[in-house]
Amino acid sequence: MKPFLAVVARDLRLAVRQGGATLLAVVFFLLTVTLFPLGIGPEPGVLARIAPGVLWVAALLAAMLSLDRLFQADFEDGSLEQLALSGLPFGMIALAKIIAHWLTTGLPLLLAAPLLAVLLNMDAEGFGALLVTMLIGTPALSLIGAIGAALTLTVRRGGVLLSLLVLPLYVPVLIFGVSAIDAAVHGLNAKPHLLLLGALTMAALPLCPWAASAALKLSLE
Image 1 (cartoon, one colour):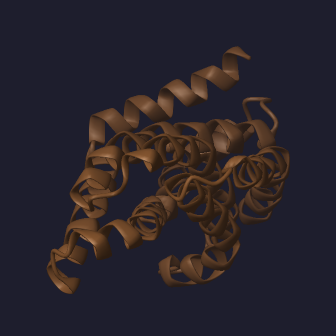
Image 2 (cartoon, rainbow, N blue to C red):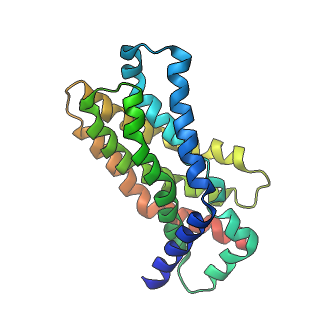
């Protein structure tokens, strides 16, 4: 576990030192959400009705901003090859970098979501569901995104291709996340949606690092 935790700590230190990716994701999240009241008007009822979908779509897009750099920087400076020679399995390397990505991207989005929900006049009944869905669903965004980042690692200007690969896989997370919040807002049982969202994340936890590691091996050969 020490080499695994060392990779996580290294990526966190680099993220804190650079600071750009985390700030960019949160600022993009903020700007995207604030554009909706300006575009469709300040009607509280309309904003409350669209709030769950707007928050989740904005969070999804914000999480994608830093995906292309998930492995790219280490690949370009040779650090990825050094990690491969460290003896740590590729799957564990991918998982460590995914955890660091979530801590620097998904967690700030989770913390910012309630403030933006107030801006969109979302009903108070949905705040708990919003936090739970973000806590369960944003790790899945990082896990699934790692596959696309690994597949496009050697592709020149692969950001567009990465988006095309990842966005269809994000749709189930988006659907169950928004459905859980809507159910809570309307006084219905959100548990089935939360369980399905949790199942997606639990299924992605072993599968996505394995798939990403296979793509990384091909890129290094």
